[in-house]
Length: 125
Image 1 (tube, rainbow, N blue to C red):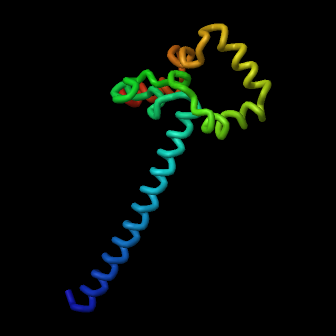
Image 2 (image 1 turned 90 degrees about the vertical axis):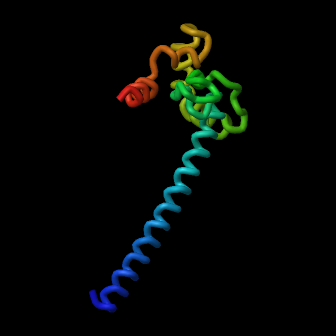
Image 3 (image 1 turned 90 degrees about the horizontal axis):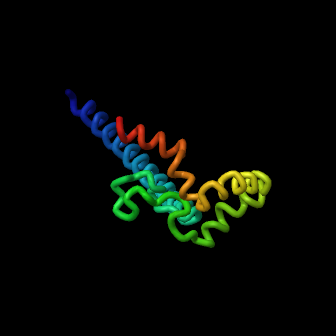
């Protein structure tokens, strides 16, 4: 290999490493934002940050479904209240359909939850 070819290869490797570093940092920030949003949504719904999907969770042992913890009023106001205000009839139907059966929303998720069923299948694989 000639000296000029080695310089070109070295420059290319440096440029590639810079691109990878930038992309890694972008992905790290995206994961951090998603994690914060997940925490806020869990707080709004009165759930553990794992939403009760992780049986090995040190905080809830897989029992931290929505409604299992106190609801954070600020997070609820930011995330849930606008949906209820926008779709009051849908929310009322949901309450009528579920409240009488169990008394607690968290209990309804123990019987059937498409997200939980998918997560459990993924863990078993």
